[in-house]
Length: 254
Image (cartoon, rainbow, N blue to C red; front, side, top):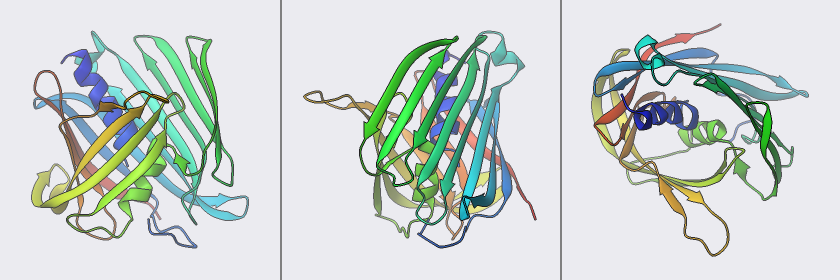
């Protein structure tokens, strides 16, 4: 598996792994487990943990995603990572986001603190103990990658629907557009499902007078065709073949 393939695996987990506005949380406490493969060969594992909770007296969620490459991929590109976000259930406003990873033994940590009003974000990116970037953005409707996924999953969508978000990773901004292209019957290790097929288009925003840098070409996402919109599969074309993330299991917690 080449380096681009592994990066596509981890990007899929962090950016695309795991609502209609409500006064109380609509997600159930649960753990979702995923398998990542390159051209059918196992490459990594990932989990998503969703925990409804209270934050300053308001309904909120804490979501943690983790990913790790297997022993074979570890020989040339070992990766361990965890992304964590806290966001309000009322209007899906993110409060705190962090992405902690170790790649080839070098640790990097990106953190974002969002204002409760949702109009400002401050970030810090540290790699190998050295501060690489600090940003302070004043802009409404900025959200982190995980919150964007949850917000998109629970919009009232049908085939032909289009959604768009201004996503801030703490290091860069992206314009993420999602288009619902159709319905499919798909089989993943967790079972057989009726699914909505979604095509993402991701463009890196590079500043004034510069054209956006388009990313994530040739990707497709499948989610369950029901009220919960569970992520079933992500398939992303890479330089050689494709990387696929499939749902292995889903455990609901009381």
